[in-house]
Image (tube, rainbow, N blue to C red):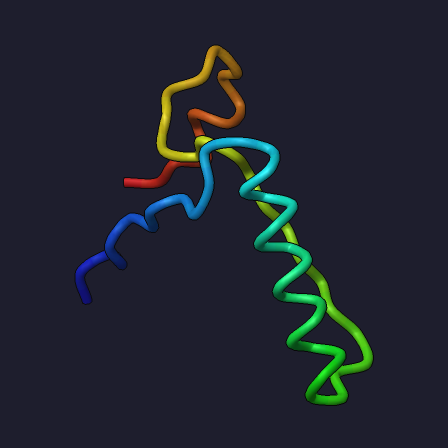
Length: 59
């Protein structure tokens, strides 16, 4: 099976991340979801100097 396509990050700045997180929680609350686990990384498609993060990029 081929690897999944690389995801495109949703936001490029803090304001966008906050807006998206708030929208996610508002939608969850409106539909009765009681627990949400949300992780995010701004600019996730950009190279970093953190070797561990680079190693987690996959094939």
